[in-house]
Amino acid sequence: MSPLRKKIPLYTSPEQIESLRAASRFNAQLMDFLRPHVQAGTTTEGLDRLAHEYTLDHGHTPACLGYHGYPKTICTSVNEVVCHGIPNERPLTDGDIVNVDITTIVDGWYGDQSETFMIGEVSQAARELVQTTYDALFVGIRACKPGGTVRQIGHAIQTFATEAGYSVVREYQGHGIGQEFHQDPGIPHFPNFASSRDILSPGTCFTVEPMLNIGGWKTRLDKSDGWTVRTMDKSLSAQFEHTLLMMESGPEILTLTKDGPGEGDTLA
Ligand code: MF3
Ligand code: CO
Ligand code: CO
Image 1 (cartoon, rainbow, N blue to C red):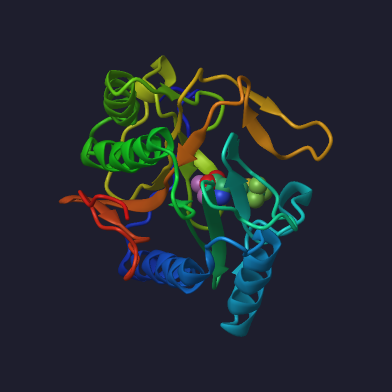
Image 2 (tube, helix red, strand yellow):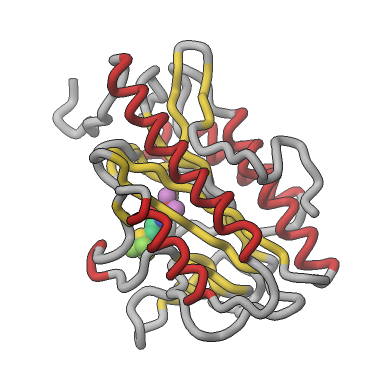
């Protein structure tokens, strides 16, 4: 055992597995609650308020609020915003794409997921980006094998996205999750050396959350708020995220929604 080896927490007891499932189940339920409100005229601030009240009403805790000083309950990333967009008073407008990323804590356990929504009629370019990003999430999920490497996820996503003509964001990645928000292993959405050493043993709980851009992969952090990440070239960016638990039989998707799209679906 090299001392450099990361410590990847494993959740294998029935109690741990049920806690993880329950946390992600509630998180998915919140996504379904927000879903009908994600439309033209709604402000992202309004979505944030709904998410905050719903979480508290159910006795649970927003994970993002106060996380390293983050000011809101959810992240809402519109158009060229890659991730960590802060909800604000600008109403969603026909033609926008908006990623809604929600993370909640249920009895000390975290669930984390996001979807990109298309508001009204969006451009063909935006629609194709969003669909390809959705498909890329499942390409990544299907590359997850018990005992396989994290690198296989990034390799599959990068190959798929590149063939479709998109770039993959490199500066933000998926992550282990469980009793912490962000823990080992990091899950890059492109293949690198570090991820070839991280094994997806049964009991590993982690997110896959690819961000694809129409233009280049580089991003720029907004220094005025310290959070908003945009594409460097202002091209459109989309993202989807699920929380997964590796089982002996393969990955279990913990954040499946009742009302959202399923694997292989064409997005409405
Ligand atoms: N939910 C994001 C993720 O997928 C993290 C948001 S952290 C915040 O990892 F502080 F910006 F909310
Ligand atoms: Co995440
Ligand atoms: Co997230």
